[in-house]
Length: 216
Image (cartoon, rainbow, N blue to C red; front, side, top):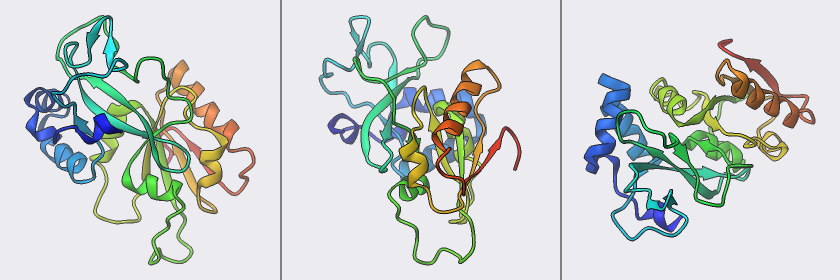
């Protein structure tokens, strides 16, 4: 948390901005605004790296990992992070990783609305009878893509990114009555595994509605 809090605004890191522009083209500027305004990501600071912020004997910064994302537990509180490689071009390095010696089990990447739901902090002016909606995607890049789809309406779906073993029964238990979960993980073996994990973790919540794929 100390490293994340010391992070710089994304707009101040030219390499991170170039990475987002390459991936999101004309939408990059708006994405940077969203991430900064909601404090959903930061650029890694130019400070001495902790021993867990390394890979293959070099620091995250030296290896091109500059974009940090906070990971929260089922109570909506930050417990760890993931960092994404922003150096353009092919590499044998992973695209993203957690701190050395730690995984992502039980931890998700959540937007502000998702954090509020996990903390059971439903807005007092939430429309009566309107069900909450949560969209579950796979990884940081899909999560950022869906962030671009949100509107100014506070009733837009909350957005969560999943990793291996991330979604636990405690996450499902924290959601409001009748929540609709739309699972939009990738259509591959890993994506199906993540989706099945959400289904298993939600078995004790028969009031939840689970939708798979592109179903609205």
